[in-house]
Each structure stands twice: as structure tokens, then as C-alpha cells.
Length: 170
Image (cartoon, rainbow, N blue to C red; front, side, top):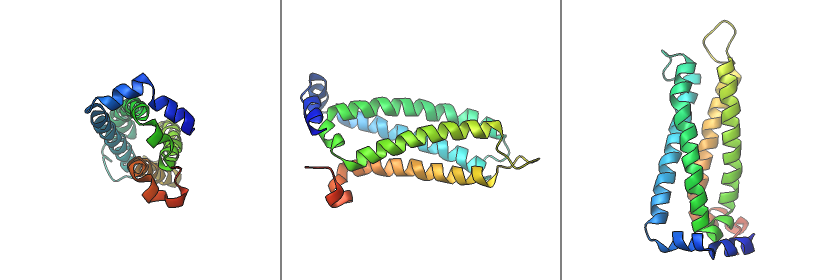
């Protein structure tokens, strides 16, 4: 993996990103803003399921309000993330935090999509507008999963300090 990262870092696209002083900070800023949009959107959906926010609105209305923001932000976040990896491939590919983040990100996107589908299909307590205990537990788990993705994104910069001997840095 290190050889591929070194080759990628020597590419003209990577050199362009590295050589323009404002590109990486701009990409990081957009990436972080999108993380905020994804997290807040998923949090609002989860809080509705838990009955803590927007209980005066049907779930479907809350989903239709926040899900498009979440999915759009995920697309922009993926694009900026790819460019950040292209700009600093050795740093990213040798960070254990990066690989765990990618795994949790895949789990988060998949789980959120499946969760949204299940909630829209009506995983509710029979004869009630309330959600089942399982749906509520899944809401809490998804918020924790997205928080973990946020933490691991920040941990990439401090991979050795976070993981110590487990870090992939040579």
C-alpha cells in the first residue's frame, strides 16, 4: 500500500493539489462543513424517532426535510475526501484511523439507508405513532456511529498519538 501511496503522491494531480497553498485548507473546510450537515441531519432524524424533537410533525415530513441534506452532503464529502486523499495519500493510507473511518463510513451510509427505508415502512409500536424500542436503539447507535466517523477523521492527523504502536506509520 505504501508503494501505491508513494506513486500517487508523485502524480501530477497530487502535485497540483499539494503545490497550491489554499487547496487543501479549502477542501478540508468544505469536508468538515459537510460532516456537520450529515451529523446534524442524522441527529434530527434520530431525535424525531426518539420522540425528543419535532414530535408535532409526522416522521415522514422530518425524513423528507433532512434526508436530502444528509445525502447531498455525503456526496460532497466523498468528493472532497477523495481530493484530500489524492493530495496527501501517504498520510492517509498509512493512518489506521483512515481505514477504520472508511469502514465505519461504509457501515454508516449503508445502515442509514436501510434504517431510513425501515422507518419509512413503519417500524412503529402497533396502533401508535411511536417507534419501537429497536428503532430507538438503532437511532442511538447511528448517532454514535457518525460521531465515531467524525472522531476518526480528526484522529488521522494524530494517528501515531492515538494508536501508538498500532499505527501503520513506518
